[in-house]
Length: 304
Image (cartoon, rainbow, N blue to C red; front, top):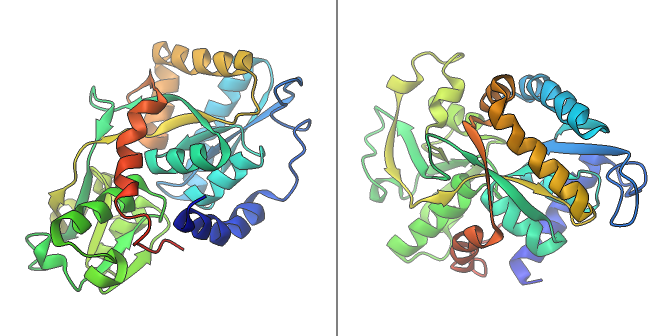
């Protein structure tokens, strides 16, 4: 494993084991390539309040378990990194991973993508740069020396693509402190938006348009915050599975999720959790653009 990936996962291993425990007994949940599946754990990371997302995913887990004929538990993790590590130890078998999280999980643990989200008829999206409307920031150039709020260091839209874009545009090697004055890990796209709203950071990078996720609590957020710039297209977030699942179980899970496209209640739940409009098939090769983007700066940007 190359240096920066090793640094990242050395730092987050403690987070992952603390969030999920240290046992990797594959007979208690998830089974293995040769064993029977007794329980499946489905992992999420908060894009909104953790308690709210936990309540929202419960009926999804119940429905999936009903269709698969096994117990399914929905677990909200502390971060994308914790989810990657939990899948690596087979404590979580199905992960709702963003593109960058999937690439890291695939490289380190052999996690496989089976499906991805569709929003507004598209399997891709863009990251956005959000600032206060009265900040005077009108361009990427104006962001130099400002405080940067990101959801998580393994967030594709929150960190990877904006960092690569800034490196390419300005030729900097250290985006976190060499371009921005400092970086704040907010712990979610909603929290990154709130950091700018409340003046704790000058710029937030999130998926488009994460402002709507906090509109209920901050009704004037669309007026107070504005979008200054966007990145290139990014493949949508995934439903990925651990390598321990057999091909038969992988197919069952994939087919069941695809069947939810015909279930209005399930799609409503998916929309409430991560703003998914539909579930579509995905291939690993679609995420090569993420690998290529990561490769541009993996040896020069510290993400430990």
